[in-house]
Length: 377
Image 1 (cartoon, rainbow, N blue to C red):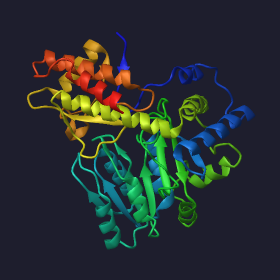
Image 2 (tube, rainbow, N blue to C red):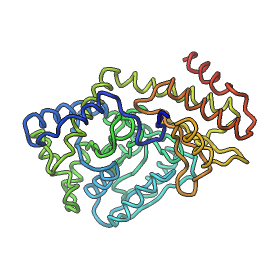
Image 3 (spheres, rainbow, N blue to C red):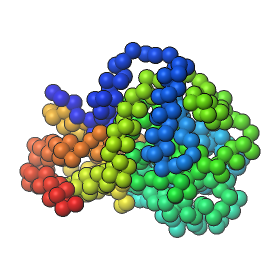
Image 4 (cartoon, rainbow, N blue to C red):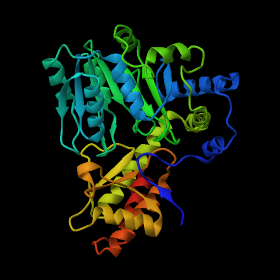
């Protein structure tokens, strides 16, 4: 049976990128390797929509998050945390590990932190050194209004630091225009690569703060990466085979065009939501993003069991809820190397499993609604 991956990370990888991973390993300090990294760095600037360097770290996305905290904050400095789910809580964990003074703005799972909430937090905490936000909260499917956050934070001395790990490439994100001072993403989401690389952009405002902050990390000291970047190199051994494959995936994004990429994700996401509603199911996120669709498991349905059945019988792998949300939501990713017909197949498989389990759904209802919504765009 063909395996079909619809988890919000890792995601499917294009064939040309997989073929790059099959090539012989080369020396990471060669001129060829430096040329590849330079090319990747330029394409990342395009994807991030920034004129600033985008640094490449060999780590998961969490490594990029840790680098942001370790470099931008001194122990005891105040940080406003906007948290709406598990990945907002990941920020909290990193901030606590580096002894930050955390002021949390929290909302229940499925809800989004609003610009008004941030404005109130900034007014109450004028000494905050940074605001930490999440572009795409993949634990709930919520997308945040980071553009509005940026306008608010820009009026202060604080930095806006954003986890765009699952959002970058799947939803609009303009680092410079939106005033994002440090932006982090990872290779295994909409950038269409296996896990192993993190990418971090840093604004001039953020570099000033970093240069004035005591060094609190060795491997994640961004000053080292900035120095090596000038020579198209890295301070430590990079995952150069992944970087070479990332070049291929980024070329695919370049060819499609970033605006077209965002529009494609928006179109598929809207059609998927229409399909879900036509099946008599409810969306979990009040402000859904275009990287994934999160569905509330209906009463009387075994959430985790349904996903296992989908995978066993039809090869479609969706993601369960995490932690206390396990069995309560289904997470269907449509980011990266996933097209409309892939998602159509996933909805069809979900319909079949629900029909087989006795859930009242008209076979083909979700598929038809998806097609109508997709065609209307």
